Image (cartoon, rainbow over all chains, first blue to last red; front, side, top):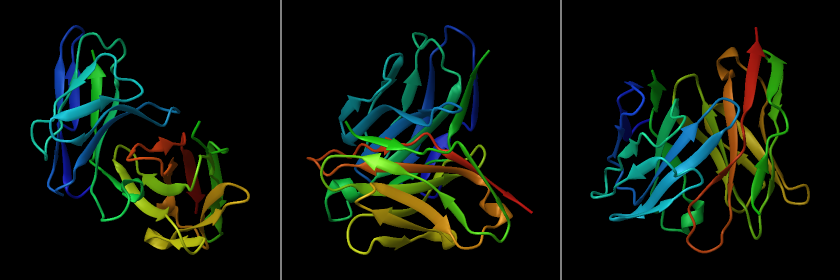
Amino acid sequence: DGGITQSPKYLFRKEGQNVTLSCEQNLNHDAMYWYRQDPGQGLRLIYYSQIVNDFQKGDIAEGYSVSREKKESFPLTVTSAQKNPTAFYLCASTGTSGGHPSTDTQYFGPGTRLTVL
Amino acid sequence: AQSVAQPEDQVNVAEGNPLTVKCTYSVSGNPYLFWYVQYPNRGLQFLLKYITGDNLVKGSYGFEAEFNKSQTSFHLKKPSALVSDSALYFCAVRGNAGNNRKLIWGLGTSLAVNP
């Protein structure tokens, strides 16, 4: 988990509320990612950002929004439009190892467990 | 389309026995393959990766994986399992097209090592 922090560890939300999950990295990595993990479904990509001030939708972006104003920060907002937000959310980052970007390893934060009440 | 399959939802082994967690992939071009482990309510930890070179890759905690191009497989192995190896294991693949850094993930295999 070292180098990437996520907060809070546990988060409870009432229906209809927006909540923001924090992800910070001190690894000087260019790329950052948000995944959602549900039991038996593996990891599904929500959004990713390969550079500051730029981000792309992943496979399940509906109901989520992100920003990338600083290299070290990539917050995720879960909006009220997300119909089933209860899940474990994982943030990851990738640096440039000097080789092809495809070879870079993703490093993960400890995760935030979001529960909708 | 790129894909990864982990054919076993769960693997059970006795402590001290060798373990294998299977992974097969489909990707155009040369694959870059990764294994991660996840303990309950924790983030994923990187174990090892195959980029090029020797087909047998050694990683953290005594794990290794063998890249088999003809069988499009990248099975994770350990000669002697420990109870503390019990966790969820994920295989992932990335193709080498363009500047794409997205990983394609398997659904995970739950490993239970029995004392």
